[in-house]
Length: 564
View 1 (cartoon, rainbow, N blue to C red):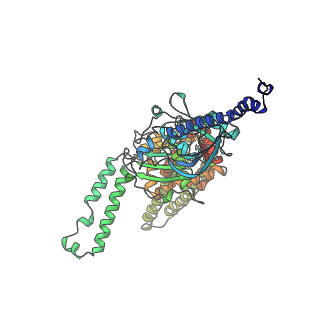
View 2 (view 1 turned 180 degrees about the horizontal axis):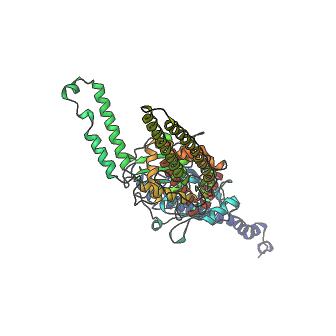
View 3 (view 1 turned 135 degrees about the vertical axis):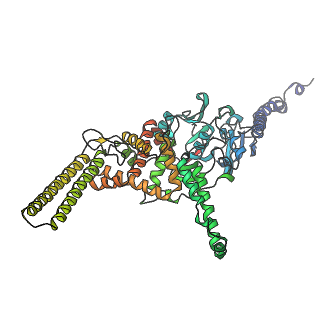
């Protein structure tokens, strides 16, 4: 054997060492390719299971998967016209992180594309959606969620630094329905996550929506009904003879029919409950219909509410919205969408009505509700009686003396009459001074609590038959609000009295002109006092409105949030 046959050549070295090294160099590429394809397959499966359409690309060398998913802005379906979509949960919600919003059915609108590069399938994130904060909270409230006061306070004070997982809305059983989510890819917006199960829904389409108030109609008064029927039976248009009707113009007949139709519609509205929607700006909608018919938009017949709109320079809309908010506010539920102005809350808590004397004497008479009212009227009537009696006696004596001889007896009677006139004049001056002094003392007397004034006024109204004896203060207030929607003149009188009351409360107390206006409009003042007492009671029941303040402030800070 030759020496050359036993030696190893360079080719052999390359074959035995180079090839394995080359294979080892390719293995990472092969591994990346396999791992990328496996991750891509899992990602596509996750997207398909969540019913998401996405454009995916992969770089097997650099082990990068790129996907493009649409970004949405969402809003709840209409509660009345899309009832099924509104109340039904999604049958197949997304399990991808960031997709908790797919728990519900939403109206979606594509607003852009979100590109994400990942290496592993568990890095996949679904783009969060944009939603109006107030619409999201309203929807959860309608389903039966309850605001968590601690969470809203923390959100208001710490903002975007609120810890992830902090609950804002709670569901049945103490479960978190809405909570703070991590700020990943939220672009500086408030990031939230939602969680809901079908068993947590405690309301349905027949429930009154949040921010809506149902005002009861006044109970039927037999006397009023009888008088209405009598007036209808004695309608002069129905007693006109055939010949006279034939002479009427066709346009007059049409006007009569139109007026009768309007009158019938007004009577029907007065006998039905009125459902009002209270927005953050005040009254938004008022609907007259049966209590169980607020289910479809086809039944929503709006009433005229121009006189109850919140306008600059006129306080009627503010008074009505505040009273409606107070009417719906209890210790468990709270109509927080409209914030009762601080000046109205301060006025409702302030004791501004004088009691009329050292000892409270409200509600004693039937013609007024302050002792000074009754005593002033009584003293004035007594003075008039004395004056008239004296005048008649003088005239009688003068008439009898005219026929007889004019002697000393006649002069004596004349002197006696003059003395009586002087005494009567002096007595009248003293009575007037006493009356003015009593009025001044009454106006400076201790002030009564608003609730106490309302209680006495309610008894006074019941004693006159203005309201039903079985109704509570809140029920009577509800019927007053019902009437305010339908009667613009009644609204003006009530709100005018409230403006007058608030003015003297803000300016140091009641003056004589205020007292005279109150005495002339006693029933209007009694009605107004019921609304003021209800506003005061509502603030106490709702813990000074703290939850309302927290919610409204958070809504003001974040109009739009990211949900996922």
